[in-house]
Image 1 (tube, helix red, strand yellow):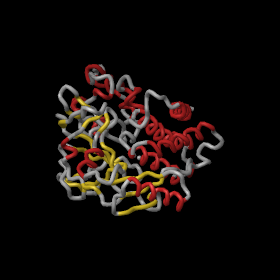
Image 2: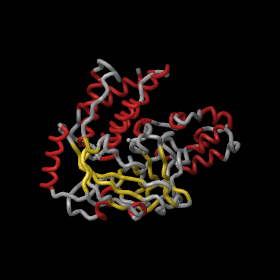
Image 3: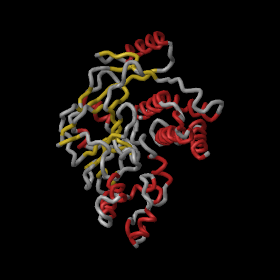
Image 4: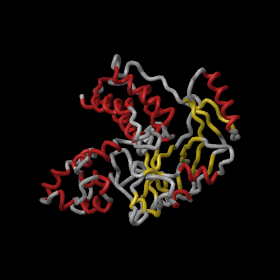
Length: 367
Protein backbone atom coordinates (compact mmCIF):
# COMPACT_ATOMS: atom_id res chain seq x y z
CA UNK A 1 0.00 0.00 0.00
CA UNK A 2 -0.71 4.35 1.05
CA UNK A 3 -0.85 1.33 0.83
CA UNK A 4 -0.42 3.56 3.69
CA UNK A 5 -0.79 7.21 4.20
CA UNK A 6 2.22 6.87 5.32
CA UNK A 7 2.48 4.97 2.60
CA UNK A 8 0.82 7.03 -0.01
CA UNK A 9 2.46 9.59 -2.13
CA UNK A 10 5.79 11.09 -1.09
CA UNK A 11 4.93 11.45 2.55
CA UNK A 12 8.28 10.99 4.26
CA UNK A 13 10.17 12.89 1.61
CA UNK A 14 7.95 15.90 2.23
CA UNK A 15 7.64 15.56 5.99
CA UNK A 16 11.38 15.41 6.63
CA UNK A 17 13.07 17.29 3.77
CA UNK A 18 11.06 20.41 2.94
CA UNK A 19 12.14 23.67 4.58
CA UNK A 20 9.63 25.91 2.80
CA UNK A 21 6.36 25.68 0.93
CA UNK A 22 7.69 25.89 -2.63
CA UNK A 23 8.26 22.15 -3.05
CA UNK A 24 4.98 21.28 -1.33
CA UNK A 25 2.84 23.34 -3.69
CA UNK A 26 5.04 22.33 -6.59
CA UNK A 27 3.96 18.72 -6.06
CA UNK A 28 0.41 19.83 -6.89
CA UNK A 29 1.54 21.79 -9.96
CA UNK A 30 1.38 25.24 -8.34
CA UNK A 31 4.29 27.69 -8.55
CA UNK A 32 3.73 29.42 -5.24
CA UNK A 33 6.47 32.01 -5.78
CA UNK A 34 4.96 33.00 -9.13
CA UNK A 35 1.54 33.27 -7.50
CA UNK A 36 2.90 35.49 -4.74
CA UNK A 37 4.46 37.76 -7.36
CA UNK A 38 1.16 37.87 -9.24
CA UNK A 39 -0.69 38.85 -6.06
CA UNK A 40 1.96 41.38 -5.07
CA UNK A 41 2.55 39.75 -1.67
CA UNK A 42 5.37 37.80 -0.09
CA UNK A 43 5.11 34.14 0.82
CA UNK A 44 5.47 35.13 4.48
CA UNK A 45 2.42 37.40 4.16
CA UNK A 46 0.30 34.70 2.52
CA UNK A 47 1.53 31.57 4.31
CA UNK A 48 3.40 32.24 7.57
CA UNK A 49 4.32 28.56 8.22
CA UNK A 50 7.62 27.38 6.77
CA UNK A 51 7.10 23.62 6.88
CA UNK A 52 4.25 21.35 5.92
CA UNK A 53 3.56 20.24 9.47
CA UNK A 54 2.54 23.82 10.33
CA UNK A 55 0.22 24.18 7.34
CA UNK A 56 -3.50 24.21 8.14
CA UNK A 57 -6.65 24.23 5.98
CA UNK A 58 -7.28 27.79 7.19
CA UNK A 59 -4.04 28.90 5.51
CA UNK A 60 -5.13 27.30 2.24
CA UNK A 61 -8.55 28.95 2.40
CA UNK A 62 -7.02 32.36 3.11
CA UNK A 63 -4.92 31.97 -0.02
CA UNK A 64 -7.95 30.85 -2.04
CA UNK A 65 -9.76 34.04 -0.95
CA UNK A 66 -7.15 36.00 -2.90
CA UNK A 67 -7.97 34.19 -6.16
CA UNK A 68 -10.81 34.12 -8.61
CA UNK A 69 -13.12 31.20 -7.92
CA UNK A 70 -12.67 28.55 -10.57
CA UNK A 71 -9.21 29.72 -11.68
CA UNK A 72 -6.55 27.06 -12.23
CA UNK A 73 -4.63 28.01 -9.09
CA UNK A 74 -7.84 28.14 -7.06
CA UNK A 75 -8.74 24.60 -8.14
CA UNK A 76 -5.21 23.38 -7.33
CA UNK A 77 -5.46 24.80 -3.83
CA UNK A 78 -8.95 23.38 -3.42
CA UNK A 79 -7.62 19.92 -4.32
CA UNK A 80 -5.43 19.96 -1.20
CA UNK A 81 -8.57 20.05 0.94
CA UNK A 82 -10.83 17.60 -0.88
CA UNK A 83 -10.72 13.81 -0.88
CA UNK A 84 -10.04 12.15 -4.20
CA UNK A 85 -13.24 10.16 -3.83
CA UNK A 86 -15.84 10.90 -1.17
CA UNK A 87 -16.72 7.54 0.30
CA UNK A 88 -18.95 8.80 3.03
CA UNK A 89 -22.06 10.45 1.60
CA UNK A 90 -24.64 12.04 3.90
CA UNK A 91 -22.56 10.66 6.79
CA UNK A 92 -23.02 7.06 5.61
CA UNK A 93 -20.29 4.89 4.12
CA UNK A 94 -20.81 3.92 0.50
CA UNK A 95 -18.30 1.04 0.72
CA UNK A 96 -17.05 -1.44 3.27
CA UNK A 97 -13.70 -0.35 4.73
CA UNK A 98 -11.10 -2.79 6.07
CA UNK A 99 -8.17 -2.38 8.43
CA UNK A 100 -5.82 -5.27 9.17
CA UNK A 101 -3.74 -6.18 12.20
CA UNK A 102 -1.54 -9.06 13.18
CA UNK A 103 -3.21 -11.86 15.13
CA UNK A 104 -2.10 -11.76 18.76
CA UNK A 105 -3.73 -14.45 20.86
CA UNK A 106 -6.79 -16.66 21.10
CA UNK A 107 -8.30 -14.92 24.12
CA UNK A 108 -8.07 -11.30 22.91
CA UNK A 109 -11.49 -9.63 22.95
CA UNK A 110 -12.92 -7.81 19.96
CA UNK A 111 -12.69 -4.53 21.86
CA UNK A 112 -8.97 -5.00 22.54
CA UNK A 113 -8.34 -5.93 18.91
CA UNK A 114 -10.05 -2.72 17.79
CA UNK A 115 -8.08 -0.55 20.21
CA UNK A 116 -4.79 -2.23 19.27
CA UNK A 117 -5.48 -1.74 15.58
CA UNK A 118 -6.32 1.96 15.92
CA UNK A 119 -3.42 3.21 18.02
CA UNK A 120 -1.86 5.83 15.73
CA UNK A 121 1.72 6.98 15.26
CA UNK A 122 2.92 10.55 15.70
CA UNK A 123 3.71 12.08 13.26
CA UNK A 124 3.33 9.37 10.58
CA UNK A 125 -0.42 8.81 10.98
CA UNK A 126 -1.47 12.05 12.67
CA UNK A 127 -0.17 15.34 13.97
CA UNK A 128 -0.88 15.61 17.68
CA UNK A 129 -1.21 18.90 19.56
CA UNK A 130 0.08 17.91 23.00
CA UNK A 131 -0.95 21.19 24.62
CA UNK A 132 -4.61 20.80 23.65
CA UNK A 133 -4.66 16.97 23.38
CA UNK A 134 -6.15 16.86 19.89
CA UNK A 135 -5.19 15.32 16.57
CA UNK A 136 -5.22 18.01 13.92
CA UNK A 137 -6.77 18.46 10.51
CA UNK A 138 -4.29 19.00 7.67
CA UNK A 139 -4.25 19.59 3.93
CA UNK A 140 -3.01 16.73 1.76
CA UNK A 141 0.69 16.04 2.06
CA UNK A 142 0.92 15.21 -1.63
CA UNK A 143 -1.62 14.87 -4.45
CA UNK A 144 -2.07 11.26 -3.30
CA UNK A 145 -3.05 11.45 0.32
CA UNK A 146 -3.94 12.95 3.64
CA UNK A 147 -2.13 11.86 6.77
CA UNK A 148 -4.32 9.35 8.55
CA UNK A 149 -5.35 5.74 9.14
CA UNK A 150 -4.42 3.27 6.41
CA UNK A 151 -7.46 1.23 5.31
CA UNK A 152 -8.62 -0.80 2.31
CA UNK A 153 -11.78 -1.24 0.29
CA UNK A 154 -11.08 -4.88 -0.50
CA UNK A 155 -10.31 -8.04 1.37
CA UNK A 156 -7.07 -9.71 0.18
CA UNK A 157 -7.68 -12.18 -2.64
CA UNK A 158 -6.93 -15.87 -2.07
CA UNK A 159 -4.98 -16.10 -5.32
CA UNK A 160 -2.55 -13.37 -4.26
CA UNK A 161 -1.35 -13.63 -0.68
CA UNK A 162 -3.93 -15.60 1.34
CA UNK A 163 -2.65 -19.11 1.96
CA UNK A 164 -5.22 -20.16 4.55
CA UNK A 165 -8.40 -18.88 6.20
CA UNK A 166 -10.36 -20.39 9.08
CA UNK A 167 -13.26 -19.29 11.28
CA UNK A 168 -11.72 -19.93 14.66
CA UNK A 169 -8.78 -18.45 16.51
CA UNK A 170 -6.11 -21.01 17.46
CA UNK A 171 -3.98 -21.16 20.57
CA UNK A 172 -0.28 -20.40 20.23
CA UNK A 173 0.57 -24.10 19.96
CA UNK A 174 -2.20 -24.72 17.42
CA UNK A 175 -1.08 -21.74 15.36
CA UNK A 176 2.51 -22.98 15.31
CA UNK A 177 1.36 -26.37 14.00
CA UNK A 178 -0.90 -24.72 11.43
CA UNK A 179 1.89 -22.47 10.18
CA UNK A 180 4.26 -25.42 9.88
CA UNK A 181 1.76 -27.35 7.75
CA UNK A 182 1.08 -24.34 5.51
CA UNK A 183 4.78 -23.75 4.93
CA UNK A 184 5.27 -27.38 3.96
CA UNK A 185 2.19 -27.40 1.72
CA UNK A 186 3.19 -24.27 -0.22
CA UNK A 187 6.96 -24.78 0.06
CA UNK A 188 7.57 -21.33 1.48
CA UNK A 189 9.53 -20.12 4.47
CA UNK A 190 7.66 -17.06 5.80
CA UNK A 191 4.02 -16.33 6.67
CA UNK A 192 2.05 -13.80 8.76
CA UNK A 193 -1.16 -14.37 10.76
CA UNK A 194 -3.68 -11.54 10.39
CA UNK A 195 -7.13 -10.38 11.52
CA UNK A 196 -9.41 -7.96 9.69
CA UNK A 197 -11.54 -5.18 11.16
CA UNK A 198 -14.20 -3.47 9.09
CA UNK A 199 -16.78 -0.72 8.88
CA UNK A 200 -19.83 -1.80 6.89
CA UNK A 201 -21.31 0.03 3.94
CA UNK A 202 -24.14 2.11 5.39
CA UNK A 203 -22.42 2.64 8.76
CA UNK A 204 -22.53 6.19 10.07
CA UNK A 205 -19.21 8.01 9.85
CA UNK A 206 -19.55 11.77 10.24
CA UNK A 207 -17.97 13.50 7.24
CA UNK A 208 -17.52 16.59 9.42
CA UNK A 209 -15.09 14.56 11.53
CA UNK A 210 -13.50 12.18 9.02
CA UNK A 211 -12.19 12.53 5.47
CA UNK A 212 -12.08 9.18 3.69
CA UNK A 213 -9.73 9.57 0.77
CA UNK A 214 -8.99 7.14 -2.06
CA UNK A 215 -5.44 7.34 -3.43
CA UNK A 216 -5.77 5.02 -6.41
CA UNK A 217 -3.43 2.36 -5.05
CA UNK A 218 -4.16 -1.29 -5.68
CA UNK A 219 -6.31 -2.85 -4.31
CA UNK A 220 -8.41 0.11 -3.26
CA UNK A 221 -6.40 1.79 -0.53
CA UNK A 222 -8.04 4.62 1.40
CA UNK A 223 -7.02 6.89 4.23
CA UNK A 224 -9.23 8.04 7.11
CA UNK A 225 -8.04 11.49 8.16
CA UNK A 226 -9.32 14.13 10.54
CA UNK A 227 -11.69 16.58 8.84
CA UNK A 228 -12.78 18.59 11.89
CA UNK A 229 -10.77 21.81 11.78
CA UNK A 230 -10.81 22.07 15.56
CA UNK A 231 -9.20 18.65 15.71
CA UNK A 232 -10.47 15.60 17.60
CA UNK A 233 -9.73 14.75 21.23
CA UNK A 234 -6.90 12.25 21.67
CA UNK A 235 -4.42 11.15 24.30
CA UNK A 236 -1.07 9.41 24.61
CA UNK A 237 -1.09 6.10 26.51
CA UNK A 238 1.42 6.26 29.37
CA UNK A 239 3.26 3.12 28.34
CA UNK A 240 3.63 4.08 24.67
CA UNK A 241 6.01 6.57 23.10
CA UNK A 242 4.79 8.76 20.22
CA UNK A 243 1.44 6.97 20.05
CA UNK A 244 -2.05 8.38 20.38
CA UNK A 245 -5.54 7.01 20.86
CA UNK A 246 -8.49 8.82 19.30
CA UNK A 247 -11.76 7.89 21.06
CA UNK A 248 -13.84 9.22 18.15
CA UNK A 249 -12.07 6.76 15.86
CA UNK A 250 -12.30 3.79 18.20
CA UNK A 251 -16.00 4.41 18.84
CA UNK A 252 -16.95 4.00 15.18
CA UNK A 253 -18.89 0.75 14.57
CA UNK A 254 -15.83 -1.40 13.86
CA UNK A 255 -16.37 -5.16 13.81
CA UNK A 256 -13.81 -7.95 13.89
CA UNK A 257 -14.01 -10.43 11.05
CA UNK A 258 -14.49 -14.05 12.12
CA UNK A 259 -11.67 -15.27 9.90
CA UNK A 260 -8.04 -15.79 10.83
CA UNK A 261 -5.88 -15.30 7.74
CA UNK A 262 -2.45 -16.77 7.13
CA UNK A 263 -0.70 -14.60 4.54
CA UNK A 264 2.37 -15.14 2.40
CA UNK A 265 5.32 -13.07 3.64
CA UNK A 266 7.81 -13.57 0.83
CA UNK A 267 7.72 -12.29 -2.74
CA UNK A 268 9.36 -12.97 -6.07
CA UNK A 269 10.52 -9.71 -7.62
CA UNK A 270 11.00 -8.80 -11.28
CA UNK A 271 14.53 -9.42 -12.55
CA UNK A 272 14.05 -7.04 -15.48
CA UNK A 273 13.04 -3.93 -13.51
CA UNK A 274 16.64 -2.81 -12.99
CA UNK A 275 18.58 -5.72 -14.52
CA UNK A 276 22.09 -6.49 -13.27
CA UNK A 277 21.93 -3.71 -10.69
CA UNK A 278 23.23 -4.59 -7.25
CA UNK A 279 21.31 -1.68 -5.77
CA UNK A 280 18.01 -3.24 -6.84
CA UNK A 281 19.03 -6.58 -5.30
CA UNK A 282 19.68 -4.87 -1.97
CA UNK A 283 16.39 -2.95 -2.15
CA UNK A 284 14.52 -6.21 -2.78
CA UNK A 285 16.18 -7.83 0.23
CA UNK A 286 14.99 -4.98 2.45
CA UNK A 287 11.45 -5.11 1.01
CA UNK A 288 11.34 -8.82 1.84
CA UNK A 289 12.54 -8.00 5.36
CA UNK A 290 9.65 -5.53 5.71
CA UNK A 291 7.19 -8.21 4.54
CA UNK A 292 8.37 -10.34 7.42
CA UNK A 293 8.97 -7.81 10.20
CA UNK A 294 7.02 -4.65 9.28
CA UNK A 295 3.62 -3.80 10.68
CA UNK A 296 0.58 -4.66 8.57
CA UNK A 297 0.42 -1.24 6.91
CA UNK A 298 3.94 -1.74 5.61
CA UNK A 299 3.26 -5.40 4.77
CA UNK A 300 0.39 -4.48 2.47
CA UNK A 301 2.30 -1.48 1.10
CA UNK A 302 5.10 -3.76 -0.07
CA UNK A 303 2.63 -6.22 -1.63
CA UNK A 304 0.98 -3.32 -3.43
CA UNK A 305 4.32 -2.27 -4.91
CA UNK A 306 5.00 -5.88 -5.90
CA UNK A 307 1.65 -6.17 -7.69
CA UNK A 308 2.09 -2.85 -9.49
CA UNK A 309 5.54 -3.83 -10.70
CA UNK A 310 4.22 -7.08 -12.14
CA UNK A 311 1.05 -5.53 -13.56
CA UNK A 312 2.57 -2.51 -15.31
CA UNK A 313 5.23 -2.93 -17.97
CA UNK A 314 7.93 -0.26 -17.69
CA UNK A 315 8.04 2.06 -20.69
CA UNK A 316 5.20 0.32 -22.49
CA UNK A 317 3.82 1.96 -25.67
CA UNK A 318 6.63 4.50 -25.78
CA UNK A 319 5.99 5.97 -22.35
CA UNK A 320 9.10 7.44 -20.75
CA UNK A 321 10.95 4.56 -19.09
CA UNK A 322 12.70 6.78 -16.55
CA UNK A 323 9.40 8.30 -15.44
CA UNK A 324 7.89 4.82 -14.97
CA UNK A 325 10.87 3.63 -12.95
CA UNK A 326 10.94 6.76 -10.78
CA UNK A 327 7.22 6.43 -10.01
CA UNK A 328 7.74 2.95 -8.58
CA UNK A 329 10.96 3.92 -6.83
CA UNK A 330 9.23 6.84 -5.12
CA UNK A 331 6.64 4.47 -3.62
CA UNK A 332 9.46 2.18 -2.49
CA UNK A 333 11.21 5.16 -0.91
CA UNK A 334 8.03 6.06 1.00
CA UNK A 335 7.76 2.55 2.43
CA UNK A 336 11.44 2.39 3.42
CA UNK A 337 11.32 5.73 5.21
CA UNK A 338 8.03 4.93 6.92
CA UNK A 339 9.40 1.58 8.12
CA UNK A 340 12.52 3.34 9.38
CA UNK A 341 10.36 5.54 11.63
CA UNK A 342 8.17 2.68 12.90
CA UNK A 343 8.35 0.61 16.07
CA UNK A 344 9.44 -2.39 14.03
CA UNK A 345 12.79 -0.74 13.32
CA UNK A 346 15.09 -0.07 16.27
CA UNK A 347 16.63 3.33 15.62
CA UNK A 348 19.23 2.56 18.31
CA UNK A 349 20.37 -0.52 16.37
CA UNK A 350 20.89 0.86 12.87
CA UNK A 351 20.21 -1.46 9.97
CA UNK A 352 22.98 -1.07 7.41
CA UNK A 353 20.90 -2.78 4.72
CA UNK A 354 17.91 -0.47 5.30
CA UNK A 355 19.96 2.73 5.18
CA UNK A 356 21.85 1.49 2.14
CA UNK A 357 18.54 0.71 0.40
CA UNK A 358 17.25 4.23 1.16
CA UNK A 359 20.45 5.73 -0.24
CA UNK A 360 20.26 3.49 -3.32
CA UNK A 361 16.65 4.47 -4.05
CA UNK A 362 17.54 8.17 -3.76
CA UNK A 363 20.43 7.74 -6.21
CA UNK A 364 18.26 5.81 -8.66
CA UNK A 365 15.54 8.48 -8.52
CA UNK A 366 18.05 11.29 -9.08
CA UNK A 367 20.01 9.69 -11.92
